Length: 517
Image 1 (cartoon, rainbow, N blue to C red):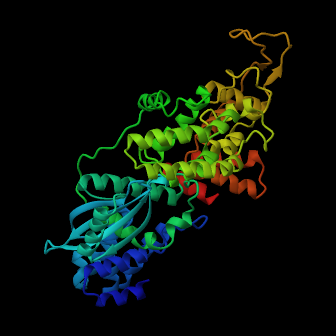
Image 2: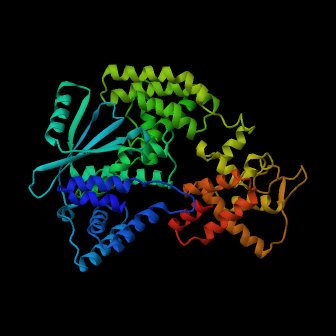
Image 3: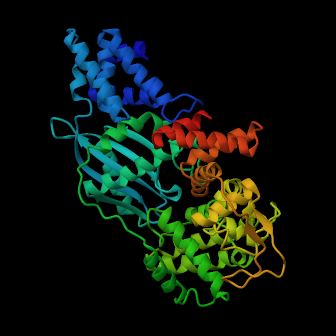
């Protein structure tokens, strides 16, 4: 890398150097090697080697990392290295002092009325004050506002002229200026979410792989994009908040509308509407009323099958409720009739595939619906396997008659489940026995007496099981799956996970320890 950096010394323009170094830093962005912190090994290793080189090329590398480094510690180390080399009499290239020193001029959002993706165009200038280049970042709202692509152009006037002409001649196109603080807030959220998906801190969106993000143009421009976004001015930017009460009001408005009047099963319609609103609020950048063919396809064929457990009547009702929602939300947004029609066509064209794609966990896993409801009270299908691993007894019929006593949402319920799992400390009681508070048959009673050491073991396992239930951090279950795939039994896997959890000094250290397992 240092040898390749020598060629950059001949560059005359800082933008050329920024693009080249951004591509260099992006070559290992998001790469994973078991037991190795790649970012630290290569990023900080390059800084150490550049500092030790004592050469102008090394000083150029350090200047670039100071401006574009992907972490504060990287930038600080690189700056210290620059100071050390300058004290030895080395001079940086002419462009080094201008790296990252740009002034934001304007920001625009380019897209269409469907709003599946937005091209956010950020224009920057240097000393002259004239627009020098534009950074274009592509946000994919159907995948939760991830950055999907990025590129840079110096033909700013030509780009803006083409966008304005398209918006003038095409009623479906959309091109508008965005306040700089609002653009900063939007892009910072996208930047954070993209980094979290790449690092594994949050699960990949359904239908998106890490290679989709870490390969190609986005990786090459990611360091530059992160630096440029942070140059945008801070300020108040409105971010719609969709609290539970506001979502309930929106659902009630829909269910009371003419478009929903023909839905026969009001309970199933209400449940389906809740899922549609949840997807719009939590995945689609807080825009539950936005409808489009791509959003319908993503919702029906990817998000629902991967995230939500539907009762049989809800599965049957979902396409009809979604079609009514499209007609109602399209009218709310003044979406042209032809666009509403295209979206409705997608609903009906994907209905048959939805019926094939949707997975009812109760059938292939041999679970009863009662067990599914215990394991997935939030309907999050993705969590089924790790919750069964954390509390396997929830999938059994042993606890059917005492649901409150074995409620995994409470500490008391989790301990009861784990005590029975670990030590078998609940015995079958006479069938005539009655629960003292509910009057229901109480089939189990705890064995009297406790052992302090076993209680400490239960404390540790409960904390681990709670994290597995919640799925945090995301690589906790990934580490468990790797060990299970290697043939380790469940108690051994739990022991390794517990040691990682209680040996870690913080969340970052915990994620590193889990990646090493």
